[in-house]
Image (cartoon, rainbow, N blue to C red):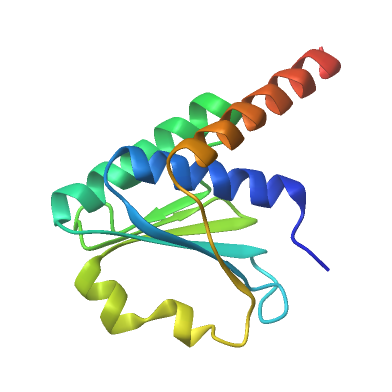
Amino acid sequence: MSLPAQTTDLAALVAAAAHERGGADPVLVDVRSRMDLADAFVVVSAPTPRQVSAVAEEVMDRVARAVRLRPAHIEGRGGGTWILIDYSDLVVHVMGQQDREYYALERLWGDCPATRLEDGAEAARREAAARSLAHAAAEGGA
């Protein structure tokens, strides 16, 4: 069974936002078989603490603008080496490259399906589709 479309759309939006601020190698890990608290993780890295912070802020800003969603919880915002952004169904891990290599979340959750996310033009196209879906949903509920 594949992830819900809402989760994959949000993950694509996160990848596009991360790419905009220098985030690298976004990976979507489906953790539904191992935990009930979230459907998936997105793990993305950045080379410096300043960029880790910039990527995390861009993710939060872009998600808030595009789908009007705020994180349920944020951890590590002041440290700049690993910031966790909890959107309930999707948990985003923005990590410095060294922390990502050391903690190896993709290997830790190695028995869960993982997908490398696109960045750049394809992610931007998906972001536009997510905005359209959010707009249509807002108009339908109004």
